[in-house]
Image (cartoon, rainbow, N blue to C red; front, side, top):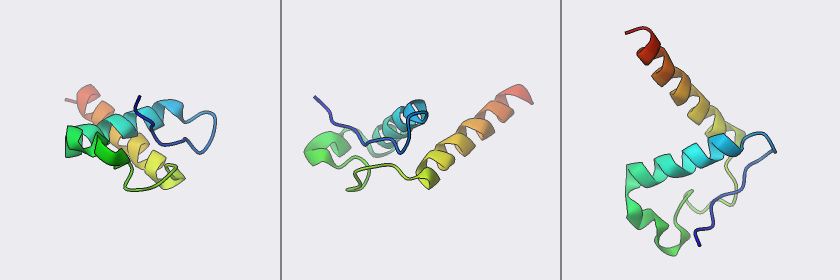
Length: 66
């Protein structure tokens, strides 16, 4: 079983999952070897989660305002 990073609070689960999946897509499946996901961190920071929120907002805006 793959052990992902912890979320900082109880409401960020979806963002943590999206961040986890994005790292796998960006860096390839090799990142799953030896628990390399998250760059050695045990938890995503609020800044990490904010980055995911910002990317999702930007993507949504480009779809809506094409």
